[in-house]
Image (cartoon, rainbow, N blue to C red; front, side, top):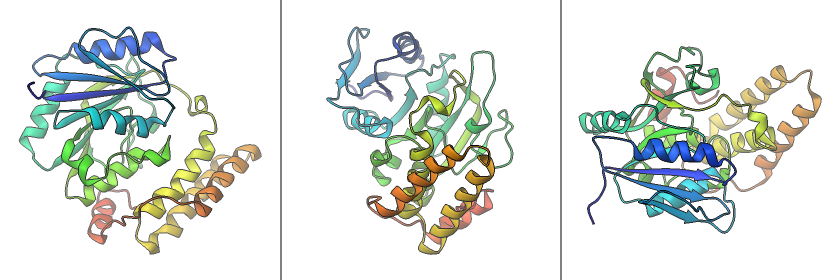
Length: 288
């Protein structure tokens, strides 16, 4: 069987059927490339998929990054595209253009698309830069939003895949950090669009607790020891400022942070100081 140019992995809990149909349809509509589409059912068996789409059933919900890793294990292509089940690709040549970028630069490891609603709006949190939130400017970045990303397979090998332990939140930050540390670059491309409805983080139960726990785990797993306390302290301060009027949110965040402190974060692979300098030069030192 011929190896496809792209493996497209879509992880879903099966609760957004219409959105999933759009996601799969937009993946199948890509032109100028050969593709395989893998739908990972997180805790369910995907049924009714179009011909040629592989359904992978997981007995339990292992979280978004864990589901991506299961899809990765089944993928055959050297280039992979991961998208949310409520995302879609409005342009048929998106993967072909991405393929050209990867072919032109063998050290390009990871690309986040511009994520926008169907009417063209992009949430500030979807632009992975610290200060410049102009969604129409492409640039190197040191974090990515996970909803629509293209990854060179070698990067996933070097990074040990997605941080499955995280389940939800910040696994894209770790993947970007590890890509830079492995000698690859990471880019945000404003000219490549993925559609996604603008949603609230509140749709994810315990999102603040997961945010805090994973921030601590991210630091424990990836940062040189002197940077772990400043990183956690910075985000604690940011959270206090943002939620002064919401004591219950603060309790949830600090409960998650304490869980991150007292529990095992998994294998530790601290970034090289050269990588820390690269991230700082790009405007996002790993203390924020």
